[in-house]
Amino acid sequence: MLVGLESWTLARPELFLAAVTALLLIYGVVRGEGSAPFVSVATSAALLVTAVLLFVPYREGTAFASLFIVDRLTVTMKALVLVGSAIAIPMSRAYFERVQSWRFEYPLLVALATLGMMLMISANDLMALYVGLELQSLALYVVAAFQRDSVRSTEAGVKYFVLGSVASGMLLFGSSLIYGFCGGTAFVEISRALLDGRSGDIGTIVGLVFVVAGLAFKVSAVPFHMWTPDVYEGAPTPVTALFAVAPKIAAMSLMVSVLMGPFKPLFEQWQQIVVAASILSMALGAFAAIRQQNIKRLMAYSSIGNVGYVLLGLASGSAKGIESVVFYLAIYLVMTLGVFAVILLMKRRDVMVENIGDLAGLARSQPVMALSLLLFMFSLAGIPPLAGFWGKLYIFIAAVEAKLYVPAVLGVLASVVASYYYLRIVKVMYFDEPAEALDRPAFGVNRVVAVAAAILVAVFSLAPQPLSLIAAAAAKGLFP
Image (cartoon, rainbow, N blue to C red):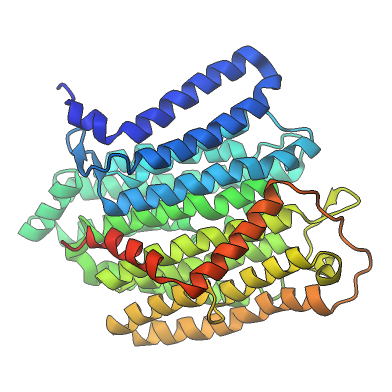
């Protein structure tokens, strides 16, 4: 079957990124290790150009025999993923140069993982979903263990690979059950089978449970979170920053598309699963992080808690719920990149430090960095009027309107508990006496990212309406 020009046109951002990545790979192989600076800059530029191509010109539709779909939701989520990946690459350079591991393969692996995320987001078929998921995962397995002479990095890569393989197997098994009972893997065919009542209810629901379990692993939702703290702590810090934003946003977008698309007729069944995962994630994220001393490990549990809030918005099953999911993920991207930019600046005698106690006295030695981290911590805690407060507020309003009163109340209580460890970091920065001050960072990418993210958090706080309108437009595609 010939593929029409319309299909290639709708997939032009993905085709452009794939072509540029292939050319840069050839350039890197020919030039050798000296090509790393150029390849990293070119890859970041290519990711930003790809984000522009999503909107210029803007088109919607399905392509490649309905395996691939483009609408407002997919375009918005792809833009968030591309921006996150484009920023994560320059954030990584100083770290890897210091440990003498900066090679041209790293930005190219990030680009390939991002390409997989884009295919995931636009998947309109279970097989297309799996191909995109595996392209992302295989690249990220390598990235997690990129610092080859580090035992911690290698261990993180192996753990992520083993547990990720189990999750992929669960996803495939669930897909095979759904194919058997619904008679197809295309989202349209599955939806039609469910609406016509031709599917075997029990078999389809069991298949859906396995698919949701596979996707829950990718977003670090409880009880499929076990890899997150160890991988976040063991992987190189720039890789942890990447893991915390782009793959999580892509997987959450995929979860929204799958559950609110073909499986919307089974809303009452999957809502129970999502609500349970949401409550458990919010609770674990709130309580497990309290005793953490390593800031990367603390951010791992924080990310699990944040996933719980996002799942609560999804569980509402309404247009306002999906709008709150998009809104929250956009804010989460900015806050998390800002936090990890500060973590990458935490050095003492030019050696990276990761303990919360190492931030003691930061307000006196580096007031700008301390203020930036204070804004991120207050925002993550949901303290008004910062951006994180608006994100959580929209989530809880959507949950209450969907009559999810108990999960909403538990979410508020979990947010209160989580405020303790966010505020503890602020207390350490502003009130504890330092044993030895952190190195004053030179002007560089991470410092710019930290300050810019802090400014954006403040701007969101004063004017959340523009982002809210974008989120509402993105959600509207699922509710024509």
